[in-house]
Image (cartoon, rainbow, N blue to C red):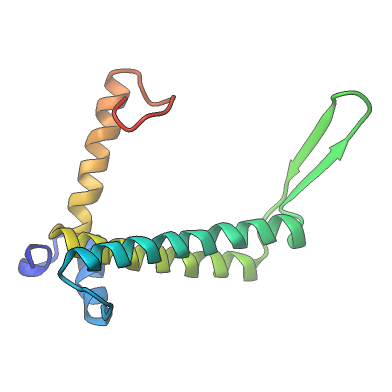
Length: 136
């Protein structure tokens, strides 16, 4: 696979090289493999969002005070160390599946990151960072 043929260029590529050793899933190296890792990555991102929601509900991450009329005060509080550790774990799980998706596409994590930086730079040059749409 091209992503792993060379020595790692940076920490992202080194991570991808190590993470690949634990990659055991259906359809690996076929279109089914890409489908599988994309769906699983979405599930892990959902778990990350779930922990943020629990931090809001259970840990007081966000406090809202409703006053008379339309006046609302929102206060943002810090994460508990336990919740922060759970979020970091979920981010790592998302990263693992992102790495696997890159493997399925035959690219390195750093290639994906560099491509994204190029896209963001182009949008900045065109004053198109805000808004929506894939090709803005």
